[in-house]
Amino acid sequence: TMIFFRQVSQQFGVAMSTAHDTVREVVAAIIAKMGEIITLPSDMQAIKAVADGFGVFGFPNVYGAIDGSSIKVIVPASVKGNYYTRKHITAINLTAMCDSKKRFLDINCGNSERCHDAHIFQTSELGRKVLAEKIIPEQYHIIGDAAYGLHTNILTPYKSEENAIQKRYNHLHSSTRMAVERVFGDLKNRWRCLSGLECSVDFSKEIVAVCCILHNICIENNDIQPTDKPIIPGSGNVVIQDCSTGKAKRDSLATML
Image 1 (cartoon, one colour):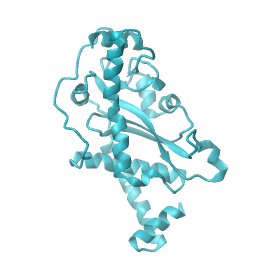
Image 2 (cartoon, one colour):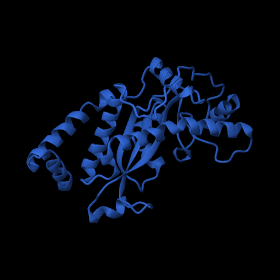
Image 3 (cartoon, one colour):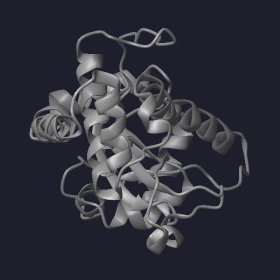
Image 4 (cartoon, one colour):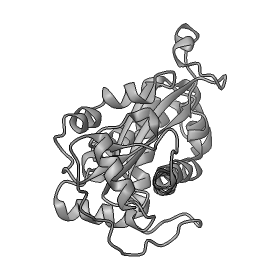
């Protein structure tokens, strides 16, 4: 952590103690506002608005797109094995759900990147609520890759495409889910410190959360990346005939598409 504060101290020409206290105060103040800035769509009007945004990409009734991303961190040698990844770096995981405008709807940061995406999601506050079917209306769903597991509230791709219907479904699912990949790309381009955090794991979690909060503030104030494309208003809301199980819901939607 001292390396991080030394960099801030040198960049702004202030004492190390001043850099330490100021950064800590700013980080705490921003995180205190997280509940107001990173929020799930809670009423039907907000849910339908999110779904309409995703509908432009061809996949209806999307509550949010979810995925995980690695954030490189420096960790003590004593726990390095817990964070050492197959890419030969030490990293923590940022699991996030976003909307089509590339705003974060939910974040969960700090798990070891060695953990499986499904485990991280299932043990998160969002995952527990989603799997208990407490927050997402029956007709709506989160979209994620196969790691998250098929569920009435989570639609994943077909592992093997047996016909044109499933191929079409997978294509639209992938095209729509790319929204969350673009969010991670923009986040790391906007806040270059996320290319490698040289502070403690606990403080790294806070820094990542702050970057996500500031990202949403930028989006809300139309500070968008040059590659952003305008979202064309449309209808991403449809009625799915069978939502009794994850498989039935996916098959019904695939046939509809």
